[in-house]
Image (tube, rainbow, N blue to C red; front, side, top):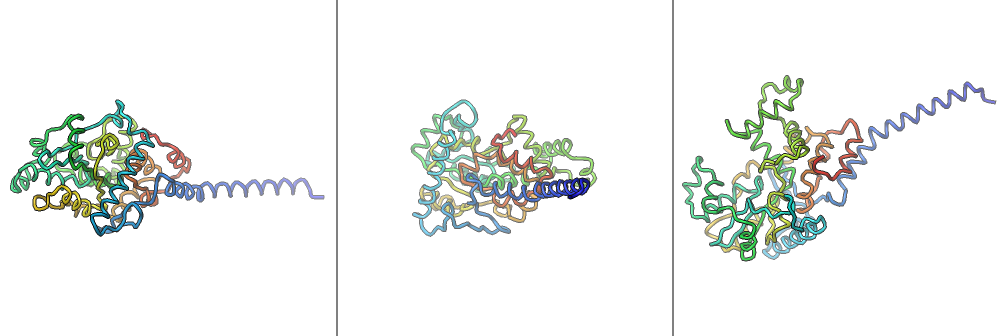
Length: 367
């Protein structure tokens, strides 16, 4: 007969062992499972073409295929258009309403009636390049466009007044309409680096950077980053997530494309991606019959985002923060078939795995 004292000791040891097993599972295994769930979820497909140290590496999937002829470009574009139409319908974004997602927004469109070309200007998605081309088509000479004192967008608006929704709908029927899109988190990082980290002196964005530092920089970081006057990427993301939480308007340089161009409200004939920009630009120019007038441009190619930079900046964020960013740009991810692959893995593991699970289950961009 086993003494009661020995039984109590064995039970206590077993309870302690169970606690250890539970703790180890919670801390080590659950976060791995959660990350796996995120990166393999049906709406986060690994179809993303990545730049690696400045060189484009195209994934051989149905969405990004090797192009050899115009027919290949057309087929790829038709897949993109079909995906956009189906996803718009699935998400209910093709129904007209009064909010920013369901009300046609013509604000950033440029209509060239002479050459029957319509483009929605998505900032940080080859916008500088195509603003230059549209200004060439408007009749500006290169000397004026190369004058650093002239703001390209201001020049463009003198020749391309902002259309009404009705004017835009009519123009799209008889024109080659197109939009250029970019991976949402690449675009966000590009906007941060251009407008916040390297903001011009005495500009709105430099002042915004100072405000972000004053609000979000901790005492420890003030010592660590005492010589850095601009916000870190982590501080910028905290500001952005609070902007969403407080339902404040987005800056146009990092506003979601879904709100900015309302692509479910208009029938774009061509959907270009920065991942295949050279091929897509050539096709647009060819279809519009503009060879000899404009040429494929990528004026800020040297400022492109590399895998090394993605790893550097997104490693400042927790995986929960990256998932919250996904929620903010969720419709852009889904409409244009982008993935979190390559981003979520580099985020810092969360101290509390339950916050990651909460972010996975949440689809609310207001967090």
